[in-house]
Image 1 (cartoon, rainbow, N blue to C red):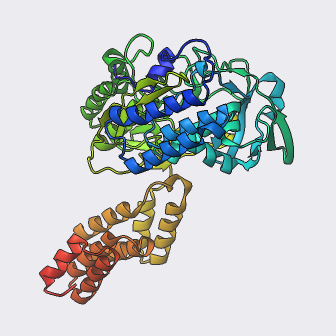
Image 2 (cartoon, rainbow, N blue to C red; image 1 turned 90 degrees about the horizontal axis):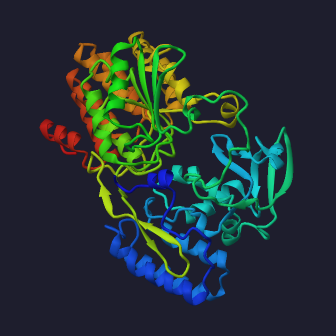
Image 3 (cartoon, one colour; image 1 turned 180 degrees about the vertical axis):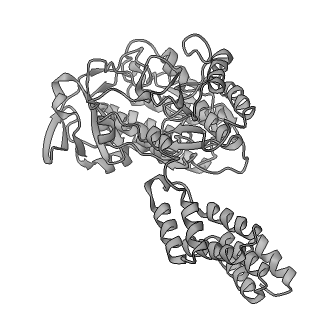
Length: 541
């Protein structure tokens, strides 16, 4: 099995000694930094894909020079910063219990409406549900930004996933300089309309065998005040499925991509899923990978093949995939394949990683500090080799608020089961254009584009497709209206003006078509379709 982040989830970190090792002096840290400076570029397949060699060397030299003046916590933080500088989320330092790190007795979560206390031990139960406004010296947003410097990440969604965790580690808070006294951390919180300052102290040390967050929270008080939604059910199972109570949705929860009895993820299990999809009178299949931190990406091919063999299922209105900030590694690779090869509608939040990624990390144990630095060894290419995105976006953005979490509401699943209710926005636009109501068509389009669910999706291609359907059906003036609408709502797109030019030319309005093509070239110099159209028309650009 490929060695991805999920190995830490399933096996625990086995790269460090079981007992907390004493921290070294300046000479030991200096030796470790120099070893890392030499070995990371040798072991990583592309260490300078995101930074230059000069930037790496400068950062190493600067840290080497500063080491004598730094405290132990500052030295650890600066080492983490050096690793994070590479900009590869798999090249990281995991929060291994052997580092001797402690934790504050709070679990924070970055909801859509702010940073909240999601869980706490019984002594701090009254803080659950409070919004955190300040951490030590900094605002919550500033603290997250500072924490991002020690979190190897490829996009801000991975920071949102993990900054709340790292900000509840006293040694990190101290090393980052976020508090004057990390042993007594002041938090400014808002609860029930009141703003208060509370002080929290470290509650214990990280423990082995607790998964990616090495804290036993089983007895903690949670913000959830109702039955957990599907994505939080069966927390001890990495792969499971059920028919939801609406009796129309087959829901598959896939928290990792690993084979064997612990996960249940193999061909036989997928065969059961698809047999159920074939036989049960379901309206949709939902595959939930929002918490999928990785595993063996080679196992992703089989379910993709099975989906492609079922055209009746492989439709945007029947196949849904929930992604999120913790969709990572082999989970990210699964999202890549689903987006590239199937008609699935992606719902939720953006994924936690780039489509093209480095992975299969191997540990380099620094001998003096005993810090294990995981270093990527393999490049995994996205299906589209020109894909430079920092994440895979959802077609339907369904963010989680603190209130929804408290009430057991899953916005992603709710968006899916209500997705087919009401008229589609393109139907509204088409009817308005047919009635000559161009202003109404524009209002409907702008309102839809401004809706939260479309935050990561442009409706420009939908309008363009509508225009060509109208043009192909002989409704030339309505098509021109659709294309003009697209140029008004998306004026920075050369393609909108190019399509308008094509429709105007079809209507015999040559001069107007030329003007549209020229506008396309102004928006995007050298835009090939418009340049070629102008050449065919025998006019200069």
